[in-house]
Image 1 (spheres, rainbow, N blue to C red):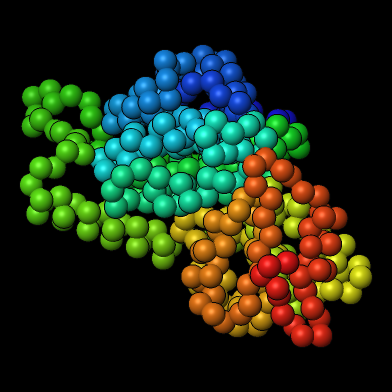
Image 2: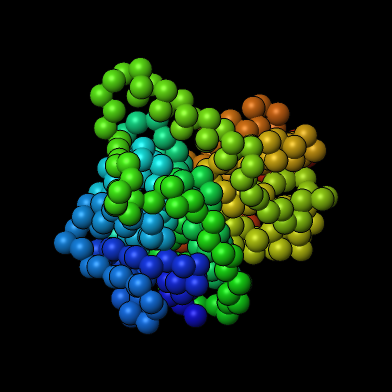
Length: 354
């Protein structure tokens, strides 16, 4: 099944009943799939909006009304959605946003890229807020993490982003959809009309500075809880590794192929793969750095996640970097050659300049 369609099917199985979106390559199969599947389920609503700005604000309204809601786009389209994502965070409304990244900046191109890491993990819009960001690296994880995203969004009343890229959206792999969990979301959070009761308002506009300050600290405390509870990562051949590659998503798939080749020639490389890009698994990476002294961060960008790696390791190990921005997808053989050039086994150091 194609990656983009896997996301759509996983969303339906997770209980998504509202989707609003606007066409942009390379994620167009998601709204195409949702337009058909949502007609087949009770209460399903699909809207092709007039713009990305309209789509995200439709999601705001649907979430406030109690629906499990999702939108999808790609890089420049996600930029246009930032005001609405900030609104979701401010109003503590759950929603799932899918970003199938493409080359940038600007309109860029339609090739796979990882240039939106900063935008996704630093909030992206205005104000002090965070978005949970999940970075799948396979068709199976596209399914599993999409379903998890809806549960996380409800649990913490916050937007959750699936951060993948054009290659993952177009690739085809077998997948097994897991059983969805019953939704746990308090009726008190849902806007259903006051009836004979007290009126309820969901608002992001708080004019009193002290009240706004307290709201910011409330959000901050929630983000601290998320950071403590929800980090995820995967280790690959790290037990005996003398060098660790840190990569996520498509880059991690490439890194696994490179590691197999490096081990064939006697270089014991391993992989640390963050699955939650925010919250970033800092403590877990720091623990690995207590045992291994050399790291290479590999991204399909000029270097964004590498900053989180440096913050996590805090000088405990040497960190090199290799990036291919703009939509270039390197091969495992290329990455293996890069590692061999940068890694000096006698000195045990990485040359950051390559």
